[in-house]
Image 1: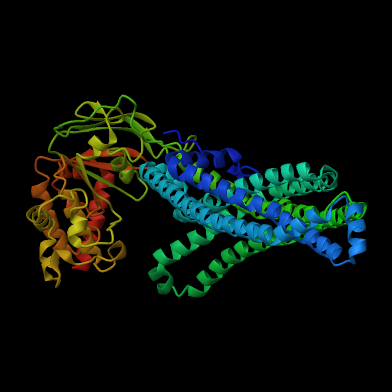
Image 2 (image 1 turned 120 degrees about the vertical axis):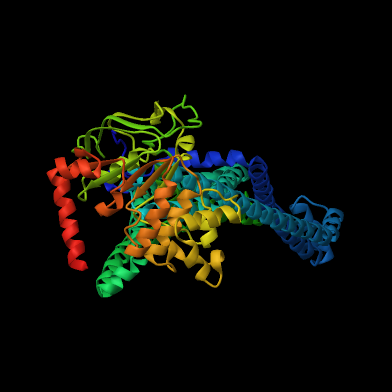
Length: 631
């Protein structure tokens, strides 16, 4: 098996800065929810348009007030001076009186319109926020489902190369950072763009000379933001990697808490965790330091622009080419230019984090699966259970030493094949190749003449019952764990499987019986009890091929004897592969394969091997002497 690709946790495999292409791929999930996307966008546009109208109305109010005050001043003059003053301004007294009488109504009307637009802006801002959050939550839901589904289908070789903590952080924190950008940063960026473009258009139409004073500030701010974006993106990638290390350390310690306590290693593990969390803190402080410098710099640039407008606008007012209302309107619109500039810092922060997280998410979603169905894979259908290894060799990585070499044997339907050998001899690897947990590097594995790579994984594994050496139970009841492979199984079928695995008696001894919770990873059960529940779980499938990976290693001799009697009966008619450390459990096997360094060095029945295999005879006699010594 040639393993390609690389672990996503490797620093060398990360790009220097997160790819915007990954962020673009994440945004394609928006197409799954067109109504929410369109609704949020329309609400944002209406809310922003309502915001842009307000300064125009304020100009009308201010100019009306200023004109009214001037008109009132003229009417307060002596009668012989009023006409002269009005004539100098190009007005007549009747027009002045009419404008003065209409001023309160105009102010009230403009004020009411401002209130209406404020209400509209509030309503549509609420709609925008609600719809964008609903949209982002739905996309996060889809991403987490996609990640989980992908992780479930990735081959064992992928999980061999990747740490659980790193995978967990991608499905949780990385998805959340991407969700925040979609729910907040993306629409904020769109709003900033609409607000800036709309404001600049209004400013040009209002006073192009004053607008030209402000324009040089914008490219300076944009260049600064681009520089900061390029600097911070790889820093956020490093934050996620360090957060992954923290999560891995925490996950390992919680899983191995008993070992930590047994070896009184709490202090050392605390120091290890502190080291990882300190590393994360240092990186976060580094990013915070950069943004602490960015925002004051942007506000300084904005204030310089505001000062320039005050100076040049003031001169235009003195020259009579700009009214006070127009100047105030211009100042408010100028704020609408600088607000998006200030938001850009936050948007770039969210985008940098989302870009880094999107890269890490799509590293999983794009990961090559070393074991998958061929496009033309067929359903295995009913089988008799003949298993053949033809010239099988296997290595975990391309160029590495083979773990198995030239393995040839045939298991006829109903036969029991025992695998014996020292740790690392290749026993577990052989049984892992049968259900295609890994694919062979060379040769073939055939079931009833079908190469296992030519049939679908689902149909292949439906015929194989497995009890692994490391017993894994899920948080739930004993009943649920036994029926894990067949959730629709009846109580009678569950009890029959438990009896066959010698588990029924101890299950019935619990107050809640089959409804007893097993706890996380089966913590409430002993090793032998967990093993028997696992055996019952495998038997529920009524498999044609049975794989027992040292399945009696965690039970005492009496329990082992009970289980072995049940298994001997259950193996009848099934092709069975048994890994055992003790020869006593495989004496009745139809064929015993003795492995050493990945080779089959001897094969035959117990009697044949005692006579013809010195290795087997040494193992047998050493175990026999140990049993006598214990007795």
